[in-house]
Image (cartoon, rainbow, N blue to C red; front, side, top):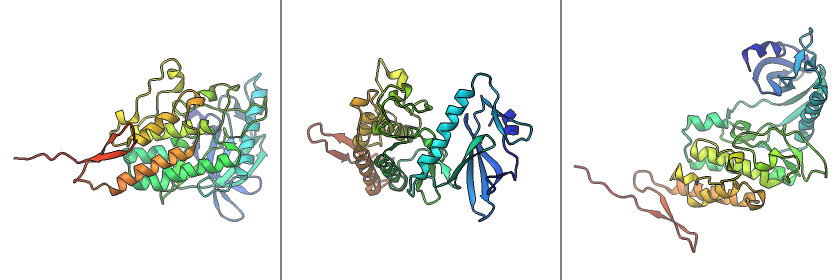
Amino acid sequence: MKKDKWNMALQRNVILNDTYQVRQVLSSSELTIVYAGRNRHTGAKVAIKEFFPQRLAARQSDKRTVFCASRGYGGQFQELLSAFLQEGELLSSLKHPHIITYVDHFEANDTGYLVTEYCSGMILTEYLNERNHALESNFITDTLLPLVDTLDYIHKQGILHRDVKPSNVMVMEDGKPKLLDFGSAVRWPMPSGAKSAIFTSKGYSPLEFYSEKSEQGPMSDIYSLSALLHYWTCGQPPVDVKQRLFSDELPSVRKHNEYVNPWLARVIQWGLMVRSEKRCTSLSWVRTSLRVQALVWKVRKPGTMEWMFEENEHTQIFEPKPKQQHETA
């Protein structure tokens, strides 16, 4: 949160909905402030997300009530608030061990609040940076594959997440993921003419997210997931889709990291196609390619063999090459 915005947060020990006690600020974004809190009746620790668009909102003198301080933007404020409250409605319909658990949502102080479980893990961005983006078998099986299964579950419920990126995935102490922030999520397929606010993320959003008229579907989340895998394998997200409109020459992740097997590299490339009709449309491909990568690293014997891969164009079989021996004087 910007320094001059700390005073905009709710004060410690404020009670919301006669149930939730605010304890401290955890984070903020352009649209929300997130607090650590507790249920004063049960003592359970919770996370409380408050709708507070920083460019539009301010607080009344009671330091609680929120109002639109920008003249002429009251309609936009209400539209964004409706989208925020929709997040609570969607999240309440999802029951999955790798999705942040819904607790409550309500309107108060002329704004909206979403209450979820409190997670004490590490954001995926920090988790990968701490481990130097290592291609570890356990990370694939414990974190990435469950994340793929989570997206598959969401799609089967008729929902698109539309904001899959490393900062929206938390890795728990046991290595399992928690998918966060359903602020851009919508039911799918959307009714004809329906509109829903969406906020793009540079490098992670597909082309169709930049136009309300473009068709969206599971392939849209697959693009974002592929961008997340690009970040994992290369240490950076792919070039933003808008920069690839006229010259889509995105290099293979193997140009950055030779230890990525060709199958996984090809699936990531496929998932990042600019045109949605040319893009990978099934999470099964992603799941299988990750399993292959996990198997490769599980059987690899460090120090005795360097697992490099040669692709047979006809059989698409990948074979390991023995590590070259170097004599020392």
